[in-house]
Structures are given as structure tokens and as C-alpha cells.
Image 1: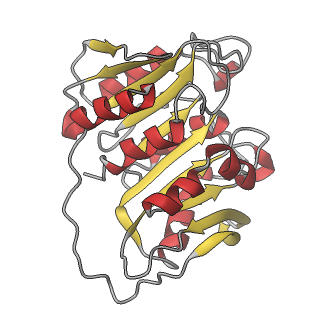
Image 2 (image 1 turned 90 degrees about the horizontal axis):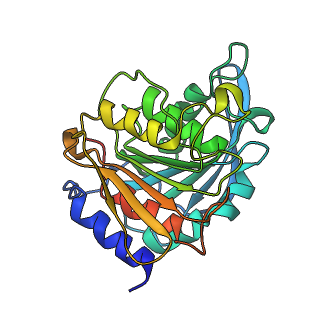
Length: 285
């Protein structure tokens, strides 16, 4: 069995079953496909943009999940859409994708006064998308790479009344203390990452302080998980590290990949596939 298939099976064993959904679509739903185009909005008095993708195979369907996909520092929305391949998966699986765009290509995390309020921007994007297509408010999820992973960590802390679960790649942080609910967390990180080192610290200043295990433990404490850390080692380079018994089924899991650097993994595991499997079994509770 391929490593990512083993991982998917293990995730399924410890995930919550999705909640039942109403079958009748709301009358205000707009189900027109969007092939991946830039949309503009005003957030905090600033003109911001994002890239929206709504798959063509949505006719007659209602309340699509929405995945927020955040680029790394120095990147952009179109580049992240290409890097993650999230839109191609969305076309097959039937969910919408909003690839977000940081001001000056860097997310405001750690939060610095005078810069754009990116938490408010993300909240405004969710509202902007929901007003124009049919989004299930209980199935809005956030992922991102590197700086986008740090930003998705912040969203899990500050916007967890709207974000169902998060999946940072190469960028998990613990930004607490966090108000609100337990938040399911899946993160992917390479042991050979020299940009955001697995062991933390380095020369990144406030952007990269605690190690990945320390950040994971911060989320586990917030989610009131059992303190014992468990590890599973399926064939291949990926190791599953997780906390169990978390409040409201809010799993806290790490895919630690031997020999992998600072990349969005495709060869080692199909990270986009694994992230979606995690998202679709963790709706907002």
C-alpha cells in the first residue's frame, strides 16, 4: 500500500464523522462555476484581492466547503494555487478554493501595528465569497505554506468561530493563548527544513521561535487532548505524530517527513490529498 494511502486510512480511524446536511439548497445560492479568477474587496479601508475557484461540477449542489489557501512569504495567490494543486483536487472533489493574497506578499504574523489586519481580511473574504456562491459556513478550512502556514495558525487562534480546521505546511505556530473552541490541526513538516527548522529558533526572530513539537503541544493543550504523544510509522518517509482524546474530536496531528526540506510535498506524500481528507472529516462543531 502506498504511504499516503496508509496515512489516509489512519486519519479516517480517528476522525469525526461529518454532520448531516440539509438537502434543500437555499434559494439565494448562486452555483455558477468560477474557473480561477481574481476578485477584489475592501477590508480595513484597503483594497485587497483573492483568487476564487468554484468547480464546474456544482450544478444542482448546495453549500460547498471552502478551502482558504495561503501563499508563503514573497509569493502570491496564483503561485500558491499552482504549488498546492488545490484547485485541481477541488474540481474532482467538489469544493471551492479561495487563494488569498498578502499585502506586499507577506502576511502580518506575528501581528505588527500599522500593517494590514489580515485576520479581518480573511474574515471579509469568507463573507465576500459566501455572498456570491453557496458556501457551507460549517466547512470553511485554512491551509498555507511557510508564511501562509504561520498565518493559518493565527487564523485557527483568532478566527476559530469561522474556521473549522487548519493544516499549515512548513509553518505551524502556536499563537496562543487563544479564545474559543478547540480547533482540529493537521500539519506537515520536513526534518530537513532549513528555512523553518523543525527544532525552531535559528535566525528568524519572532517569526520562528518554538520548535514544531512545541507548537503542536500548544495546540494539544488548547484542545484539551490527552497528554501522551503517540507515533505511528507506516512504510515510507512520513511518520504520524498525534495527540488523542481531544475535546470535540479536535485532532492534533503532525506528518513528519524524513529528509524533506522546505517544500509543499508531492513526492514524499500527496499533501494536498491528505489535507483535504482531514478537512472533510472535521466540520465546525
